[in-house]
Structure formats: structure tokens, C-alpha cells
Image 1 (cartoon, helix red, strand yellow):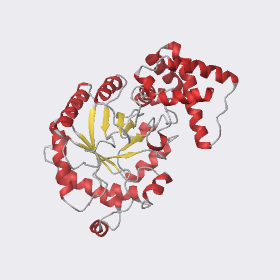
Image 2: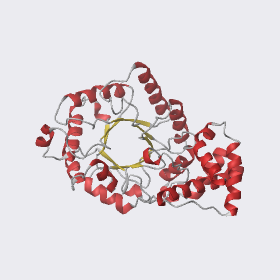
Image 3: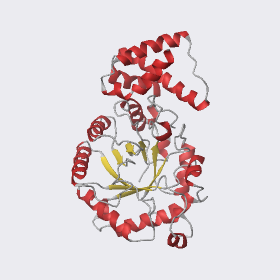
Image 4: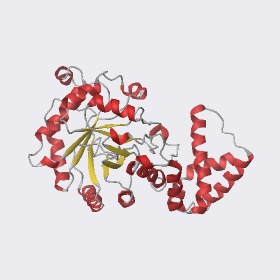
Length: 378
């Protein structure tokens, strides 16, 4: 995998908690994204039971037929469909059965034309849960995860020479939040993981935090040097799941070093849960991913608003965005949001604009924040 001045893989990781995107929206996003340089889609919705909690089971006929149509739509737009397995919860890494089950399930996707698979160990406990694994891997979760994926690759059919494998390790960011939730990770996790993975296996990483404000070239170079494998950024912007469910991230992507492609193989964004509203921030993500060195956040965002809602709506959306961002900061700082008279006047106009579009899909999606605006005006 040769690194260039642009990301070789650009697109979306549907990897959030909460209701998965509809099939219709995924297909619409393929068309929208492909026109803006998207070439990769990682299917990994946490609340798809056959992806995570019931990953060992095959998809029922109806769901499988829908997935086949989705894979076909991706292929028509020249987007590589990546299927993600999430087997980590309660997995016995020493047992052979799970390897056979995963490969049997992967075979159906391979037959449908899928050539990239991701094994995702994110958001599981930092310690091995089976005694046999503790003994075999000397209490190293990193060794267990790397060895397990290596066994899968070594056990795959000989005809699968064109298959690419990715891994999201349990340790996917140095953010202290991870250790607080899942327990402390072994200090040399990435180095140990890299020793066991086959050379071309790519490693997913979210940056210096679960939700990273900035991602620098120095940071990703340091991580790439530690794991010694191609790096794919799983950027948790503009996603708003879990503790962020009351936030609306509709501003432009910011804080991403334009030189990241020098050390990063792929760049994928975890999207907003609100399907229609999500087009705006994702447009800026696509603009950055396609030409990082030419990306201008505000110009990209303004174009996205004008394309989606028309030029007359631009000022209203600036006010709405500013209100959402300030409300989020107010929540985190536990300080009351105070607005000046001129800000209240503009907010009233934006509120009238939103009320006039409440019947549209995006108008329904923004209802919670429309109510917040109206409450602030009382």
C-alpha cells in the first residue's frame, strides 16, 4: 500500500450506536458521495444484530436480499463495500469454531462481490475473559486479537487472493475515556498487535481522542510507526450517538492536518444519525478527503448549504449552526447560554424559517433543536 498526497480510501463508516440508516438513504449517500470522491463504505452499524450481538448467525433471507441490493448499488457507483464483523464480546480467541463461522459468513459476501472485510474489536473489555486465552496469550489482548485475525487470513480459501482485511483493535485511541469505560490497556498494545498481524492488514484508529478535535500528521505518524501497518482513520465526526445524542454537528469538518495522507491509507467519517441533515457536514468531509491541501472549511460548508437549501437560507443556517455549537459548549461548561439582542433577532428569523419547513424530512429531524431555539426565545 503506497501512501500518496490524497487518501487512497475515502468515504463513510456507518459505525454508530442507534437506529441504522435506511437502505434508501445508504443508496442515496452512495450516489451523493461517489460524485464527491467517495470510494469506500464500511458497513458496521452497532445496532444491526447480525453485525454484532448475533454476528455468528447468517442474515435472514429478507435482510440478506436487502444487503445484496445494497452491495450492488455500491458496485454501480464504484464504491468498495466493506463488511464489518464485530465478534469481540465474549469471544474465546483460542477456539476454532468462531473462525469457521466467520469465514462461512464471509463466503456469502465474497460470492456477492465483497473483497474487503473488517474485524472490529472496539468497545469491549480490555482484559481477556477466558482462562484458556489468558494462558495462551499471556494475558495480552493485543496478541489475542492479532493472532485471531492472522488465523482467519491463513484459513481463508486459497481463491481469496484479492481479499483485503482490516482490524479495529480494542485500543483505538489513547483517550483516557477508553480506559475509564473498558479498563486499562497494556502499554505496548499497538506494538504487540503489529507483530502478529499479516503485513498488509490495515488498522483503524480514531485519533488522539474518541471524538478528536484535531488530528495532526505528527500524531498519525507516531501511531503508524508503533503499529507498523497501514492506518485508516475512523473519524468520529459528525457522529452524534450515545452521550452526544442531544448535539447536532452540522458545522464543517475542522482540525484535520492537510498532510495526513502522507501517513494515512484511508479516511472514513462516522456520520450524523439524522440522515438528511447529515448531508451537510459530510459534504465538507468529502471535500477534505478528496483534496486535503485545498480544503477550506467555511467555503465548503457554505457551498453545501447553498446546494442543499438554497442561497437565501445560508444566513439562517449560520445562525442555527452557531446556536447548536454554543448550546453544546454551554452544556459542557454548565453555564447558561446568554444571547444579545441582535442574536435574538436573528434567531427569531431562523426559528420562523425552521417552522416553515417542519413537514420536510430534515424539518422533522431538527425538531428537538427547533424546540430548543424556541425555548431560548421565550
